[in-house]
Amino acid sequence: MKTPRILIIAGSDSGGGAGIQADIKTITMLGGHAMTAITAVTAQNTQGVTAVHAVPTETVLAQIDAVVADIGVDAVKIGMIGSPFTALHIAARLEALEGVPIVFDPVMVATSGASLADDGTIAAFGKLMDAATLATPNMPELKRLTGEDDEVSGAFKLVSRHGCAVLIKGGHEEGAALADALVEDDNITSWQGSRIDTTSTHGTGCTLASAIAFYLGAGLPLAQAVERGRLFVRMALHEAAGLGHGHGPLGQQNVRMDTGLGLRLNQVTVTGKDYAKMVAFYRKLGLKQIVDSEENLYARFEAGATTFSIQCDPEAEIGDTVAVYFECDDLDERVEQLARSGIPFEHGPRNQPWMWREARLRDPSGNTIFLYKAGEARRFPPWRIDDSELPEPAAPAPPSLEELRSGPTLSKKPRELS
Image 1: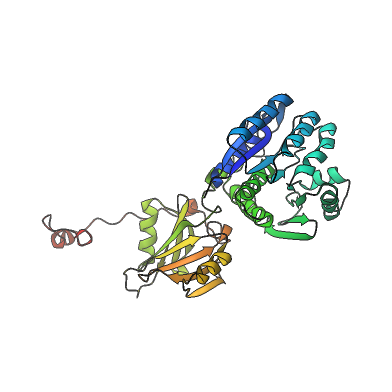
Image 2: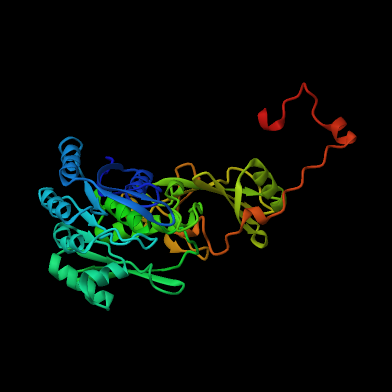
């Protein structure tokens, strides 16, 4: 699979939360190659923007020409534009990139409230939307672009006027429930979700647009690209480090295996007998516990970018009982393709009570394999616990003199090493 080459045309954020910096982190973590044409240099942090310096139009165009001529481009993401003159010339350059998907995030105001586009630049956004595949305004931006109070009517106005699809982002809505809607000329696709409790929201729009551009550059249809881009943003919000004293940056650097292209080995479950001893052992080993379901004798841990879990049964015969899980975002399509190729499944994709959808099969040796799709529910289920609030596991008692006397001598190999 080739690496998607994504050209980012946007401003620089010295605080690393939005703009070029957020775009590069997003595309890199998803597995793409990020290239840049910087339109402006800003001095900003989590609390606001203190200075903006627009890059001359000819320099912006030179950056675009340099990467297109040598490396090539599979998709383009446009963010902050330094001036209306630059916007018009960028649009003209992009018209020459036939067949290349373009995602335009019409940046007008920073999360802190600082203005990042004057009236002339906003007026020139129309030319960029004429060239775009998708525009991703938030609700205030959509209202300013269209003058419509109704978001759907405003989105259809842009679709009709410019020929691009429009993603209505619901992050500015009040309440715990959120909804985003992809408006195309003949279709509306919507997604619902719950608000993630964090003030680290600086760069959400940049991150979403870049993730969508990556997936479009990888060849995914628009709706699938939006769906996976949304998941990346949500996981990055969960992973935000809480930096700064204002609206902090997202945690793109920790979203490594929750969404992406192809199969990802990221969950292993082993069987045990004694729940308390198993939990204590793996916590002591250094894994971070995120689920503690003692009544079900089940615990889950984070192991870097993957998770590891134990399922205990006091009566179980311990043997080759490891179940291997491969997460894939295209679960149903992949299972159908594999079944058509002759691979038998014990059961096809099913929604499970633990909020996963999974299909089960066995390898030629009889090992249990699951293909599954969990999204947020693998690492951020509603019953996720805070590992730091759990008591430290007690240190094991030293062996008694009798146990030392009856234990293996130095001349004998331990059973597990023999």
